[in-house]
Image (cartoon, one colour):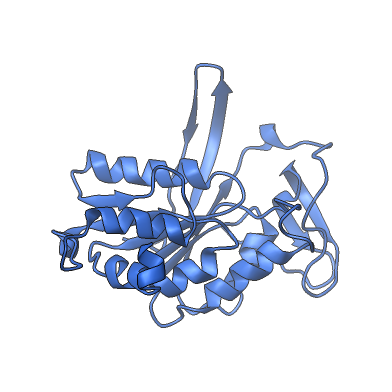
Length: 243
């Protein structure tokens, strides 16, 4: 109803959040990543908003923000409040336009929801369009270096990029399933030193030589079990900070 009355309600309310606005997207892991970020803010005692219920389209943002606003359209304490918004890949460009985020996080890109999205590559294209929108505003992108489709989002990006990925040969596999990203933008084939799953791994283009970027934050010594998981996650000295 709020969007019917005022299509700009998300922008009007969301941009009041002065403590930083973060958009988290990707085919897999966006809910986990956004909840981890919100949990860190909670542990640090930082006021924040988070669409925890999982409604990750613009109407979900509107519902979250309207609930926190007063009758004059102001969010109490917004100047010091952060926002963590999980968003669907196809919604990402609209979310960028509405929220004007400071940071975007992209976990990975796979073909998904083929009943809704008819042509392969739509999601990567939608994200690429969204990534170009806030060139003058978004301070930092946090991108998965192991996914060549995600890495392509940094092409021509003028802002800071913080790369993350895995460095654990124990998780490399021969049979890794179908790859959704098989060819580079130049038309060359991707070849892999390591493949962790599908098209995710240590990749390079056999034709133009474009390759996996060096990571700023790296997961190593990964241990997965039924009762939990552990890993080492050093961050390189001098790595771009998104805070």
